[in-house]
Structures are given as C-alpha cells and as structure tokens.
Length: 248
Image (cartoon, rainbow, N blue to C red; front, side):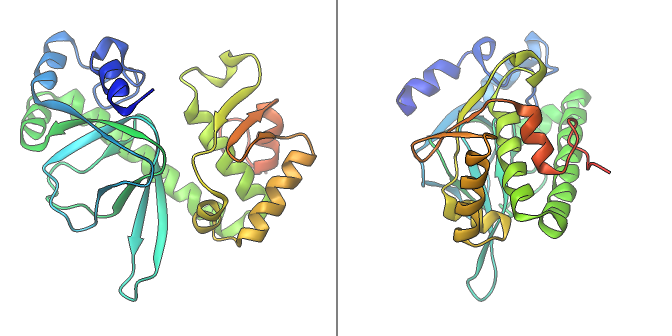
C-alpha cells in the first residue's frame, strides 16, 4: 500500500483503525463532523523527519499507522531516543507553541492532523476531549516511569523482551486475550536503534535477540518479521506480569 493509499483508506472516521482508542474516541457524530472540518492527513516515508525540536507546531495529531521516534539532542550533539509514537498516540501539546522533541518516522507513517487553534477551541467546548487527552497523558507518564525502571533495573534479556512485548501489544487492534494464536508483526526498529533506545550495545542486542529466538520465545523471518508463538511466555521473560506490572 502506498502512502497515498493509506491516507485514502483512513480518511473516513468509520474506517479508522484507531477510532476507539484515539483522542476522539468519545466524540459523537456532530463532534466528529467538527473535527473533520479542521483535520487533514500527513504521510511520511521511513526515515523522514516529522518535526524538529524547537520548531513551531501549528497542528496536533494522532498516529494512525506506522511508528515514529522521539529523540532529544544535548548541547554537545549527543542524541538519545526517549520514546516511541505508536498508533493512536498523540503528537503535540495544546497550549505549547513549539515541539519539545525531534519526531522522525521509523516506518512509513500516517498521521491524522488537526489545526491547532480550532482543536484547542473544541477542547474548551467539549470537556470529554480534554478528559480523554488527560487520560492518554497520564498513561504516557506511567509508561515513562515503567521505562525508567526498565532502563535502570532490568537485565538485557528482560529489556529486549519488554520492548518486543510493548510493540506486540500495540501492533494488534484486538485484545491479546482475543487473538487466539501467534502474534505476527514487523519490528519497526533496527538493532542499532534498539541498542540506542535500551542503553545497550549492538552486540548485546544481537546476542539477546538470538537467545530469545533459540529458546523459542520469538520466531524471526528476515530482519524484521517477528512471530510470538505464546505471548505469556514472552511476558515471563520481561520480568512483568500479564498486566504489565513487575513480578515480585
């Protein structure tokens, strides 16, 4: 599917794959119509920048398909990947004029964008949109705290397993309990990017991925296609329970 085809496929809210978990999930038909008047779609090829830190943002957006990275650059030029934007994640902040991070498409990426000022006005007039955005922001905060734990306390194997499980969870539109079989997805990050994100060396990432493959936790086809035969087994390798909390 080309980027243009992806935009056409998602242009109708009723066909949107993130309709029930995005910021607009609680909007009724009239509210969706108002959003439709201020929305447009943007598509990016893998590796293409979406916005640079410090740039003025005249839009906010939801990721419809694909994955992007959030990266911060230090004064001496060193960079650190600080987050991933997955489908349904929100890009930009109402009330903030500039971007806080570099956003770069990791895979082909489609975003549903809203002109910022009209969106802020709709938020003021429609409390449940602001409430939904608050819930998503708090979920993001929880995820950031869990990531601090992952980087600081988990073993290399647990880090790799955790990242794969996060992508697997968000890569399916169904609840994992309803999948009823292997989970198959394309890993959106190179091993170099995984090493950067997890604070590991490239050699360690390659070694641990190979170990998970050898132990039957994951199956690899080519460089990116991943099959998880049994998600519960993968979760056991993360040091978490099935709900994402730490095992004790």
